[in-house]
Length: 81
Image (cartoon, rainbow, N blue to C red; front, side, top):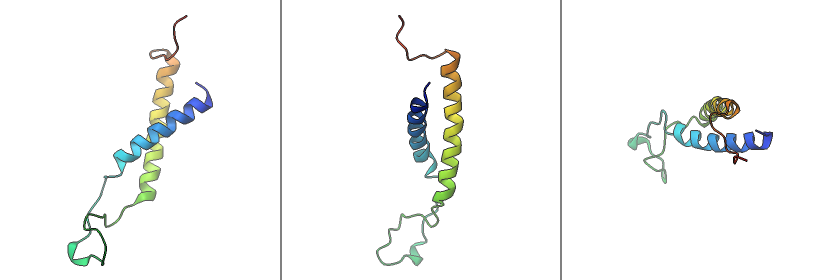
């Protein structure tokens, strides 16, 4: 696997994991404390920085597993000669 292939796989895994991590720990804003124009479904604290770090860590672990599976030859994407 080349560096470019690994980078592309990492980005794809990162986006998928991000959308899985986003709903973690979301609490809605109290309806009584809404500001004018604020959506009642918006999160009280998004904690995006924490979620980005968690996403990066999980993605790195999954990329390592993917790399080991491809390296072992269990799964191959090459056409047989």
